[in-house]
Image (cartoon, rainbow, N blue to C red; front, side, top):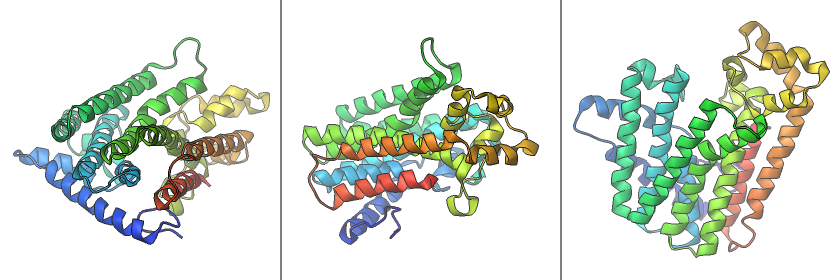
Amino acid sequence: MMNQIGIPNLDKALEASLLADMARVEELMRSHIKGDYPLVIETSRHLVEAGGKRLRPLLTLLAAQFGDPSNYDIIKAAVCCELTHLATLYHDDVMDDAVLRRGVISANKKWDNAVAILTGDYLFSKVSDMLADIGPEAVKLQAKTFERLVIGQIKETQGKSEGLTQIEHYMKVVADKTGSLIATSARFGALLSGANAQTVEALTKFGEKIGVAFQVADDLLDVTSDETASGKTPGTDLKEGVPTLVTLYVIAANNPDDKDLIAKLNGPISESDLSGVITQLRSHKALTDVKDYLAKVAKEANDLLVDLPEGSAKEALKSLTFALVNRSS
């Protein structure tokens, strides 16, 4: 049974605690980004108020359940993880020349590229300010994470390195661009709750795995989604020529029967071809192979939880993995 948190079969007491803490995260996030300059206030609130899944702060709060979750620094860290994510979205939209983000007009289109870039920079500054209050270890963790986010973006922009296949390159980009911040979100919660070192490491690795699973599930949704149920319009990435694991699997197999399909997948798909390409991909072996890979990553994520204490928090993390993976089914 689903709930307000988005995790099926969640323990009622834990759900109430998480809802209360998520409300504190939202309140602090909105108050912390306030500035003295009206335009900065408006632009920085733009994506905060557009909503989103809030996966990163949720994972911080869940990981904190393995120690003492009452430390207010955990709320601060959860805010920092979400603001870091939002800052990268402002920058991504400039690089992608995006028109929409989370159902609203993107900042680069509502204002301009310079304003969008500077808004992202402003949010990064607010993150640094808050993390400095937590301590030097938090600042260093954020710096290392930011390094991976930037390197992942550079890798995506520059293309694969010599010696890597396109699929290997893509998965490295996914690990850096998506997995790294979700891993850090879990690590912050575990560290600041005082969880033991073994638990901290297990939750960090778990976070990276579900970060990868989250992106692979998103790739599948681009082909399989029912827009009404998922909120994602099928074929969005296909129309823009954005590689996904599904399209890369088709291209890598290089089946002679797929010659025409592969030619189309090597660039943006026209509106007239889109429906036919989606139909072909939905019945293609590559789709099944990616689903199998996603199930493997999900199992690897849950295997990392084996030595964690039994209880509602551990069950919630398993259910979170299930929910993320089954967005694509």
